Image (cartoon, rainbow, N blue to C red; front, side, top):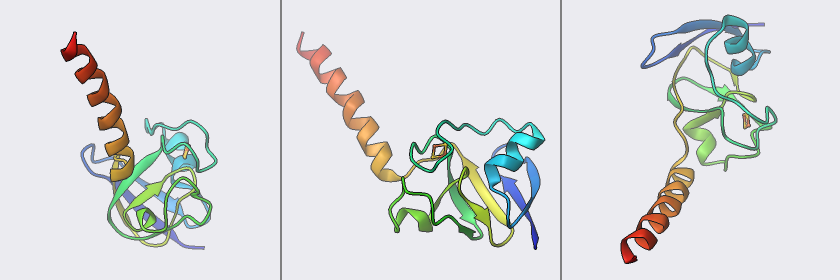
Length: 112
Ligand code: FES
């Protein structure tokens, strides 16, 4: 068993996480306000951008293999090295989907 340091950029919060623990479970233990919902790797509510380091997250079914290179679902991700994460960051596909939904609403309002 190895223990790694996980640092959250922006807030500067730092926790120690065993390689057998998920990042989310340690956040909850430490009182860190990490968002989550499903806790089974599907909803992406717990997503964080990987700034530095590596995780293993084979059960993160909400991410494509390519997205797993740059994003961690903290409910599924276990550290494989010291990490720097940016919480509340989502894969571009999700950001684009949200923008389209927001834009569609704005255009409809502008036509009135
Ligand atoms: S809480 Fe839903 S994917 Fe992590």
